[in-house]
Image 1 (tube, rainbow, N blue to C red):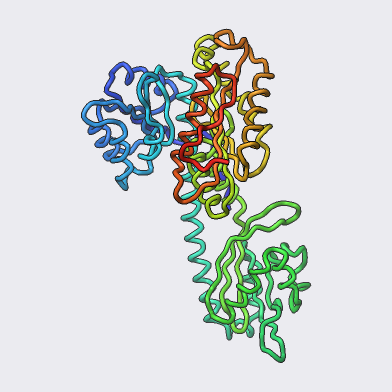
Image 2: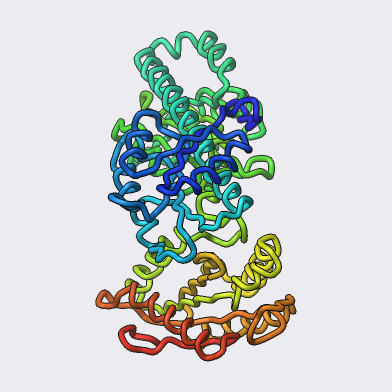
Length: 474
């Protein structure tokens, strides 16, 4: 598989559609983006934006929420409902003074948001992040299409070999030359059966090409006739041996991806096995490059680009999964919502670079405390963070929240505009529950949010526990 080069020469100029009913905002954003060599298109209202997106789909849309006749939520819904435009990422634009329904923004298909007045570094960072994800998605789709075509060719080749089974044994020299020239691993194995029961107990190698032999760190002739398959496959996954038996007994082909440690490196392989006489033939391809790219894309799609914590979309998905899991297992689930105190005055006084640095430091401090692999730290929005704690009762969650509060205070980050301290502090709200099907996840979040609100109202730099009204808290 060819290596993927992300050089600038290979990437075309990306287009961005700005939708805003305020000419001043259109001018500011256009000038900003054109200065970074983006191709900019503008639309003053929702209908114009939809027509522009359908006629010549852009790579990304910056969409204002408050517009006459049709607001940004409806525009986004209609764009996502159209097959031609549903793939286009939408970043919402909202003024700090506007009532911005973040949950609705994500539900209708938005992937991010920026607030007015615009901060150039933030706008460009969010746009660059989403365009990078889009480019990688396109590369993966092309790679998948190529792999599907190659798999089709491989299946055709295997069918042809099956039809020529009788000729195979009479023309070993010719077949060997074909196998030796293949870039894929290819092998043919015959079943070894118990003499009394007739059941398959192992497979004997009949033909092994050099690529396959390399996986065993051997030469093809050293493997021919040997009973090594069961021992080898059981190291990867014992269930696979039964699956190969099923190929022989039923004639149904087997196609899978497997992970294998090869020469102290983690590798991924894709194989196709088909029945061949009383055995099977298998074709193996190294897909490590594609798998690593998919994992990288998956990570980019779930990580907040500034703090390195998980993003809001990952929070929504993970909390719902943990909620359902805890219902099934009758297990406790805790949630901490936390907010950096007086962060807007901090940003206004020290500037957005210092503000970003502050958020990064706070996130790193929380990450050092929330260490369990099952715990999930997310950037909930702006200066607000959320921590999901599966299998954690209220007492444990409160201990973690209090430790976070103390550790942030101990950082001694100067804050000249705080009304409660000379350094940066944090307020936290905690909720805990053993959820049942009758409980509401929305109520669970709201009660943690209410506790956070009380922490702010009561003087900040403190931990408040949710008032237990609806949730079955511990």
